Image 1 (cartoon, helix red, strand yellow):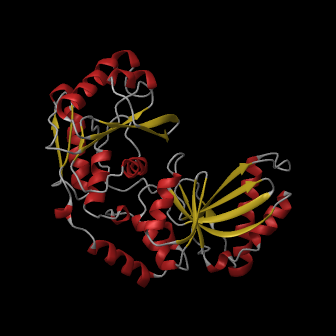
Image 2 (image 1 turned 90 degrees about the horizontal axis):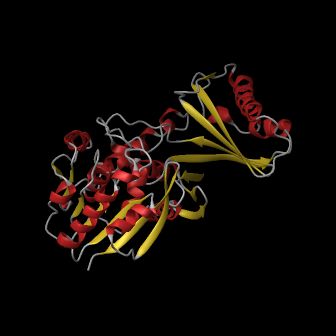
Image 3 (image 1 turned 135 degrees about the vertical axis):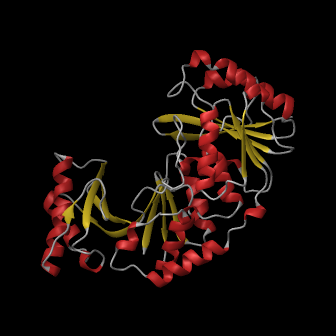
Length: 376
């Protein structure tokens, strides 16, 4: 089957490398994600192991769509009865790009796709699914670009950044998938200690611990996937994939992973989340102002996402924080590699360091740069 893993802008290369690392074939990196070929067992392995992707889709068909009637006919030709339970709830999303002059209203386009699926199922089985836009059992995505349509079944269900371990929150947390992409871009694979002096609710630390301990993110307690509700679901192959993933877990292989934050509530959130993720004994955090933070013995890697005045605080009050971060690096982290996710170039100037590399990323709606500093 042909699959597509969606990824945030700037992290497509990470997603492609992850897919290749699973031994999958026919990989094609495109804006917004990566396409690849997979057998059923490989799809299950991808759902369990891919860390940086947001959704995993299975392609159901491609066809020309010059009118709504052609779109309806193309969707209806797909053998939905082989995949979907007609008694399950359904949601349909449509993405329109390029020049599709026949589309006058996106809502009507969604309606035509939904009608085609329901009509096919009713004719084949005598029953049709009901619509649930918020919590459907299955979700169909259609993409129409320049009169060419591609239709996908969402194998993931809930977005993959919802790992299931976030039991406590803090303002403006990173998405787990973005944190995983950041860790990948830094080259950190669990070989050396890691430190985050502005840890917030601990997303970077916890994702690092999952990598270091070889814990598949899809193993989170209570996590289920939409493909488990398909008629084609192979429970035997799924259990084999889960058992293989569980056999990889080794907390003892994880290096020192430490962090701090000036806010006791943030540190408490990190501890609660780390425990829920199964890495509570690995992630060590303390309450400390950045000027008094105590990094682990180095050389190590520092990775952090300081506030940049968009959602937490105003820029005027953040210059001193960046200056303290720069002082911490120069005073205690010589010989380290430091990575700072920056949403504001003016603030990072207060580090008084020159970046060696810059990786463009998007943190939600914010254009960011992951800055690499070799502290020498």
